[in-house]
Image 1: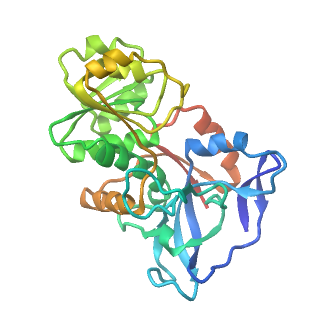
Image 2: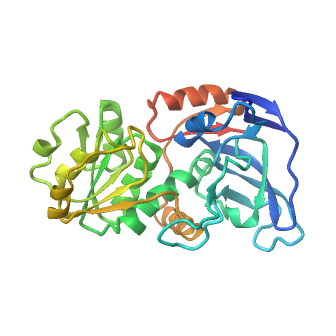
Length: 325
């Protein structure tokens, strides 16, 4: 089968052996896969001496075969891949056996994948293949950050630095669906306009004076994945006693901040990453209830996966980038 792999430090399309289903596994014939920023970082984390690894965490397709002990899934089912491995029930933190699909296991940038039946969920019928293929990792990350950790409530105001990321597009829609007010930032006027079309109430230029622009707003919750470039600026606009949830660090992941100001302000700082199967199922139910559609910026053929990677690295997209398989 055809796959996009990292082999001896080189990214390339290569023929790989077709997978088979173990007793509790299913083989999914993939229709689409989704890129995540994680995919960009893996080449720097895997030694140049390593054999071919199929990258990719997100995907959707049709079940082609099932193992003899499989009970939840049948051949012909249209499914979404759950990239959050071995984290089934909601908990304060991932279990020790938790991992993310696409390293060390083979991922979704291939024509087929085999994995545990516990790692697939039924595809909502209203989603296209492209939408289904980019759903799980970003939507699950956003759902846990906003609801499980952030505990957003109707009528609250949520501040999201960085409007164009895949997770941010889900955060905007999720928050608006439950009646929250949403404020985002971006350096790009085009992304700010698209965020407002998606439902954001205010879209600020990242380089503007946030305190001045938001002097009449009460920010209850900040959800930040940028890191050092925005953390202290976010604290400055967060109300006293407010919550800040961190789920990533695309800039420097080491931050200096004033502890005295922090504890006097009674702020609540929470970490978040990915989420459990239980939360993914809740996110899927939310998607169906509100007939939500993931935001897909561009779709590339599997043969053009390198071009898709290059596009993602430039951070010009609004929403997700998909691979058609």
